[in-house]
Amino acid sequence: MRRIARAYVRLWDVPQLGDTVELALTELMTNVHRHVPDQWCTVTILHTLHGVRIEVYDRSPVLPVPREAETWEESGRGLALVALLSDQWDVTAHATGKTVWCEVDS
Image 1 (tube, rainbow, N blue to C red):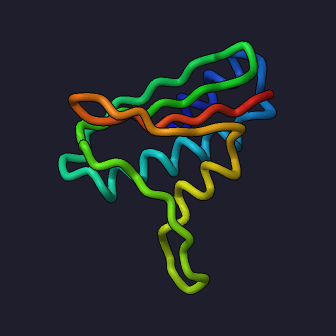
Image 2 (spheres, rainbow, N blue to C red):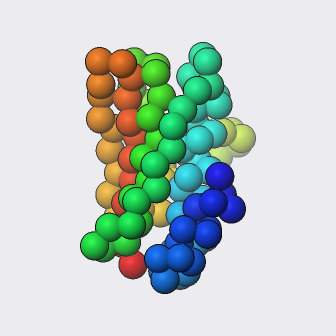
């Protein structure tokens, strides 16, 4: 997925967003792997007027809760990192799951 995301960023002529988009996508997908029982998701990467939008939909009704990880913890920083990397992010609840999304402006 990271290679695909980077290819889209190059295609859309915003290569300066490559590292940020790749890392944000990795964090969102890692959350699915760690917190969604069936680990199933769909990923949508969109070119917007302002940059790139990443959407990760999964079938879990449990909404993510950002938290502050202790300095010694090896995990727990995913959403905080997405918040730092992106210009905005949020979670949209659906009857069949949720979409966690972020936007990275160019």
